[in-house]
Length: 89
Image (cartoon, rainbow, N blue to C red; front, side, top):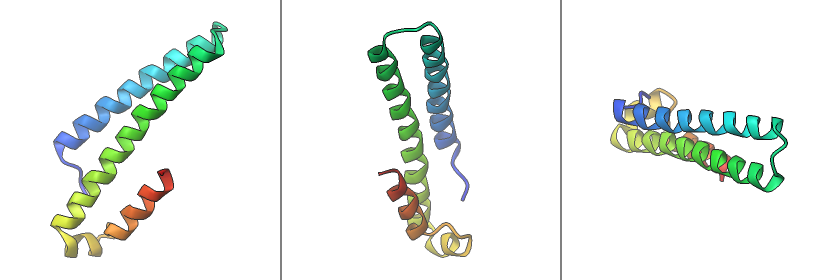
């Protein structure tokens, strides 16, 4: 399954946001910042990463529904994507 350019752009944007947030968290930990502040930033990074994950799964499900025969032959079935989705939830 190939992701559309729009989905790739959206996911890359989210991942770059996560990258920046994680870098910020590393600096906060190194500087000895308050635990509560670190946890808040970790939560934000986790949420952004989760959103990237869900966007890819949603794109995969859309692909499977629009191209069921092709999705089954390439190993990208709805069932497989459902299992991936359930791993995160």
